[in-house]
Length: 545
Image (tube, rainbow, N blue to C red):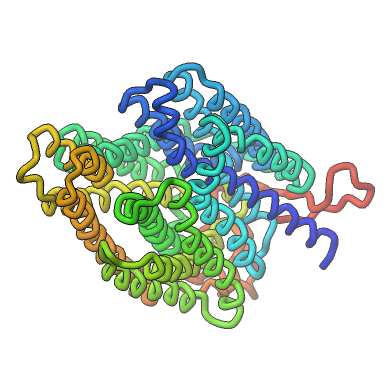
């Protein structure tokens, strides 16, 4: 491999480290939240905002972050985002009041909103289609594996240090990421005379925040709640208005969301399928820890350890997708992933209160392998349709939809599981106040049962939760089966060459430009160059990306 080629893969490691740090922060807070709330005397609403502040800011800024990366250069903004993420982590660790912690979490959301899409944008510029599957597998593995590892690391830290350590752990990783990105990631220089689509930025931020907040409210109050319905309706209306606006903006200048991307089956269906996979993964990460803690009786650290089969399965699936794609049609690899996910989640419905952990470990590992296969392949399919000069905006759109799918997966299926739990919970002989508390969720039910020393309530709470979990697993299986059909029928073979945006083919190459699966050219007046050797190198060369 050439020096430039070796440097690309070291740069990929820097990107994976940066993205993994953001992924880790997504779930490590769950372990520390009770201790943090108690130490700061935070109310239930304030504790909820410790989580929601990050999620809402992330949702609001993902799309604008990608557009700004295309305009000002991905590397420059990534370095700034990592610095902000590190500073926000220190602020979180030493926040003196709940309000200060909420503000610090919002700062973390700003940093994360830029790191996530810009990592993929740089990857798109560095790697040609032949190498892209392997590159996507690397960064996807780093992000996905960080999610189940968060509770493990959080449990270890809380055993030896105070709650702020779950944020300070980000600082050395961010420091390494800063050095690696500065030294290894080439400079990207994107020049455009088009004005920023400030109207699109505003509408998208309002729509994403409203929709995300509505989903969060649905998880707490149900989808029938008036405030929930109003917020969700407003979010959907804003996003519909955004789609209408962007079609008009695209006629005269660079839009926030390029409608031309959706002319590619690879981008459209790759994004849809990757979103469905995220829906399933985050839904599992919501249900399985509750099962391990409330039904099997494990603590936070033990729960994290018992999630390792899922993490190992994800790594195996993501890394296994690359050699499979070399030998087979990528569509078949994605279909295999969804098929395995459907079968494994259907098998998980046989889990009972008395099932041994070995059974659970087996089926969640198989689910991890299936999700790893389909997430890596479908994300690559979507990215391969994005023109390099629109890499930030295209990557941001993919990740925004995945983020939204994750939130909906947790809220919608959490609401279903909660409804089944409440319907099956036997609280006939409990005092009204205790019965009301027990109906909030399985953790509350188990706590009330232990306070009252009621074995009957404990059995009922655990059985009711498993009944609800079974319903959600059947739902995952049905969604995975539907995704399998969509993969077979709609996802194209992404091994076909991708026509670069804004390249006007010669007459001999004209037939290729008429392929229906290729994206239309992006707005004119854009050029993108990436240095392939470090700045200051006497052998500097430039590779037109």
